[in-house]
Length: 275
Image (tube, rainbow, N blue to C red; front, side, top):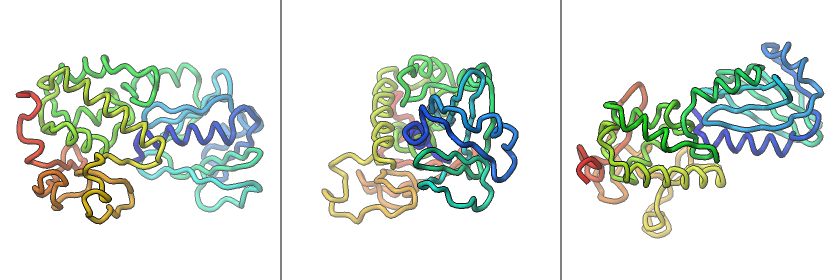
């Protein structure tokens, strides 16, 4: 599932390609057809993201809410738009570009109140100026659940997925199973600042890079990472390989139906609460 920086990149791209101008909206697949007819020819006033949710605002009570889920994706091209291929849920055509949405978990036309309700259920988004890290801390600091679970809770931190979760915990030497209430406030503040910086970098680059300069392949002489997700990382999808810092094999386990990656030496049991 795309992480938050991907949705913010999409929002920026859609704002640049279609914003402040009339847009042709259609649903070749048919599942969004009634809503597309209402929107066709209207001006896309603003595209924005909150966590893993994308919002296209066309006017009062005309908001397209998109959640890509595991299989959703946008593809784009230059006009004139080619004939739709496959199951295109929604197509936008502007003056110079078009984009097709396929396979989303959600693509719905909702009201302003409904959009506000969706956002109200979401936690702090490190890429939004209105993010509330103190609110996230309040939730974390009261919970007995492991931090590895809490960081993936979209009602606490919106936009954080499996990659940022694993890498953030590693970069701060935190045991993934440490209960949230045992995390020191000072450590949380450092983690939040780091998460903001990492996700801003991901927004700029279009990929997730979490390895510090001293561990970069150009410095260490190791081969660059080859993975469809791209980016240089410490532990994500590196199970069985040596830790880039201490050489201990990176471990993997399943937690809350998702794979969790960590280094048992750099992130020992109980680490962070004792620091």
